[in-house]
Image (cartoon, rainbow, N blue to C red; front, side, top):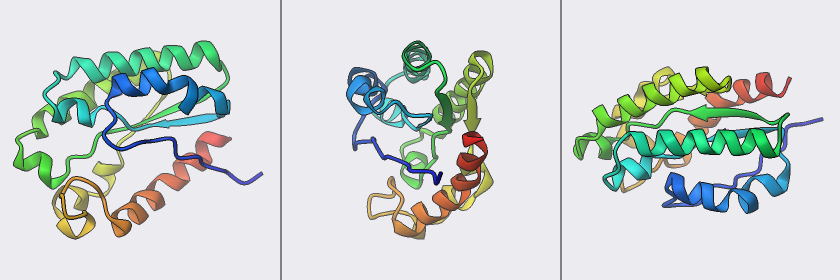
Length: 155
């Protein structure tokens, strides 16, 4: 059967919000695979690295408890041009490292697409006016990078 992704993300979400709305956004759909991209807003609004990492642990544990066969694939946080301007690159790097370690510890996938495509860190033509969110071209590149991993995870 073809892969039918469902985007349950919402703008401005912090990792605590994802935990709060997890039953409605994720669990009610009984997904086979969850792609997790969250935590950057935590850092953007001043949280320490440990906050999104701890909330990822909670998310993974709740997912495993509610839907044991579901797979989890965590995407590394992007270092957008705005993050460099705000001096967040080191915090994001540390957070990605800790999320990667946690992924290995708990046995779920971790993927850094932004390392695979370095233009995401410097090419402003891939971003919307805010230099934070990808534009249509940026999301197309991200989707093309992600698609083979989704197919592999589905197997």
